[in-house]
Length: 296
Image 1 (cartoon, helix red, strand yellow):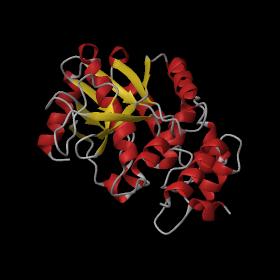
Image 2 (cartoon, rainbow, N blue to C red):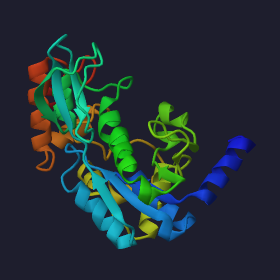
Image 3 (tube, rainbow, N blue to C red):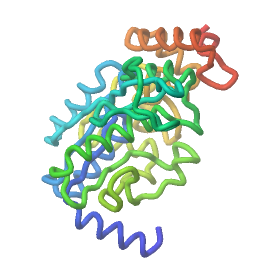
Image 4 (tube, rainbow, N blue to C red):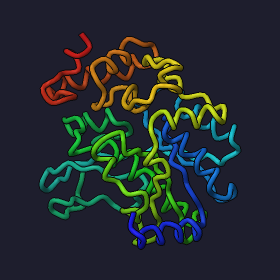
């Protein structure tokens, strides 16, 4: 981090009017919350959870329970979109239900449109787009994480104040893409310069994250043990990778992790709908690899 960015980072935290910790329920976001509470005055810290219907069942309740244990205010929102077809050019598009204006077609500008359906989950979105997300087009994250939070932030601007900060739990060791992320930068998609992003655990190892949770007696989400992680794996083994907290049918998961989701009571309903959508659209969850084949 350059000196200029470091100065901006320190000044930004000093001036913060509200620090919002984005909690997914995964190990990194919970450890991040603990780190933030050690760093920032407690009365400035709140949490926000973006509800994703394909998460492991009970995730919202888990996040709320942890926040209650730590005495931190907890907020959550679920993104919802209305799908339309333009009556002039037949372009199909989505409008956030948080948008009150009359929908207009970005292809031709017409406001004459027919309502088609609601899109309220990642699998709804896969069905609407007739395609799965990919590393280059992670529309699941943009629609149900980033845009969801930004809509909530705009609606709660008065509570957040003039210089809010959003804390994100990405770690550099997770992927090459995340290794390129900065610790501190302006949040995009909002009023220019209003909100900043802070990644407090960007340099942490996986074992650091689990050990931070153990130090505060915070139990990890049940999905880690369900997907095969032992206590030794969590707290003593210094390696990266392993089970993910993300959606049960996340396209980034290995065949083994996807099978775990399918052959457990908690994940079966999500996986069965994913199978049905893959069969209907003909577009496979991973390039060259059908979900049905990986689960066989």
